[in-house]
Image (cartoon, rainbow, N blue to C red; front, top):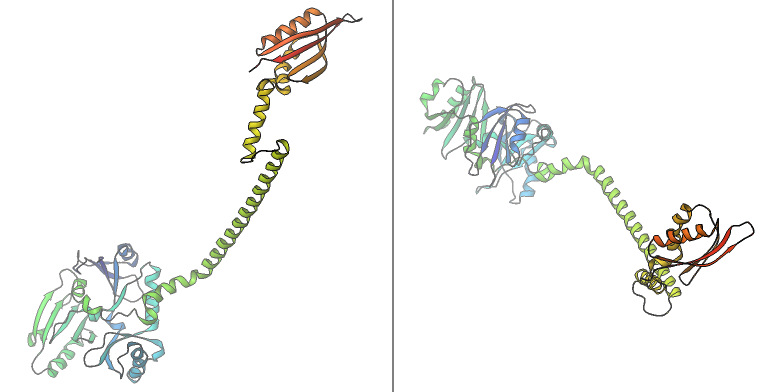
Amino acid sequence: MRETLLIRLTEPCTDALESVCLDATGKPLVGSRRGTLAEAAAQAVGRRVVVLVPGTEVLLTRVTVPTTNRQRARKAIPFALEDLLAEDIDGLHFALGARDAEGHWPVAVVARARMDAGLRHLHEAGILPDCLLPEALALPLAAGSGGLLLEADGALLRDQPWSAQVLAPETLPAVMELLISRNEAGIDLQVWHCGGELPAWLERVSAKVESCNEGVLNVFAAGLAQAEELDLLQGPYSRKEQYGRLWRPWRAAAAVLLIGVVVSAIQLGLRHRALQTESTALATQIEAVYKQAFPGGRVVNPRAQMEQQLKSLRRQQGGVGDDFLGLIAQLGGVFAATPGIELTGANFRDGYLDVELTAGDVQVLDRLKQQITAKGGLSVDIQSATTGTDQRVQGRLRIQGAAS
């Protein structure tokens, strides 16, 4: 079980509050502290959050209606209490506890406007409570006795399991006199002194007084299990509805985002399909070209098979360097670096390059032959050399790459 953050709202819709952290067994880890909603939100991370609503905001009572069905009772109880309430029942929230053996339904009544404002204030601070409880029900109550919490600015009296009153200091003596007169056998009273002076009338009742050295919330922590029998977060204020209210403003944006994701996915799918179609068409064209160039035989990978066939043809013609472009690439620099040479024609056939040229004299032609041979991997043969009327030599060279 998780740790619990117990929060007491000292004033509705304000940042003022008291809080205490409880361990998995419900025992306070440290004393209670006063702080703000922002500080409580930081403490709430990873913890179960229980919020106590001031007793002045909640009416506690019991109602008998002729049904044992909880949903039917929820609908009937507002009308059963209508004559006893000053406000219109449409503006009130009714929370039910568990039906007792006598057929009574415990009920907590609170104004919807107060519920809405309080929850909105908590949500804005980043606090989503797991339980919203009347603080009066968290005041420990033993069988046959009453509980009284005394604070400097007032008192909380709980004389019955489903009956509690928030009293001003000046009205407390009169209420206690009335309570004592109604209980001829006397009343045992558990008093928690958390502020102010102890009243003199306590001497007339059988009272056990304890000081709240660790804070008021340590007292409420002791009765928290009983208080959770009547959670205000039910019906339209259930946890499911809380999430729904938080989610509702974002639904339109989420819908637009979802539409964008779907459209983007469709576009990507269509693009992928188009690319697949294009790839298939290219593969078909490559296969057709291969079959046209090399008819017969099985086609597995036309591109790889085409490369292998070309390499085979080159080897048959004398090596990779014996093709026309390869020879021209090797000879281009030699001709450019030899002055007095003028190319007049070239012919490539069966791995031989026949070059016709004009040189200044035979020595230039011989020097060209030596430079070509020095390139390495090439053999040169002077096929003819004739001196013309202009005293220039017209020659013909046959150049071949070395066999691989």
